[in-house]
Length: 99
Image (cartoon, rainbow, N blue to C red; front, side, top):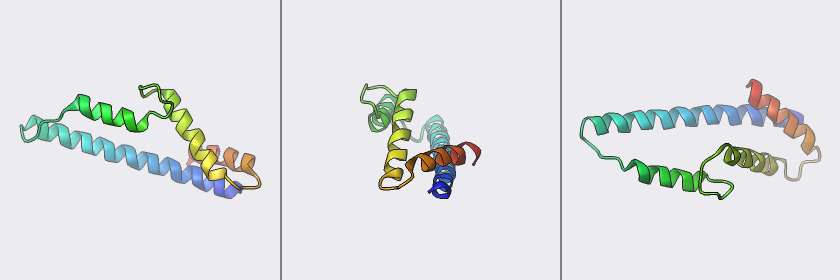
């Protein structure tokens, strides 16, 4: 389970970086189109939608605790029915940190 934990942590980090890249490119594209008066973006509504989807602890705000809760849920789901969940979780953290 240890090698799977390291590989899962590595893959999670790469997916998070790719997701961040995609969000950044989308934001810059929308801002460019908005600046050129091609589209009009309702940013308060966008914020409301994003916070609603990503608010893991249900407090109505997007905080560091939401990311901690999401991370714990991810590791819990990945370690379900594994005989050595502790080794998986430790290797996951190492794979995520050094990947």
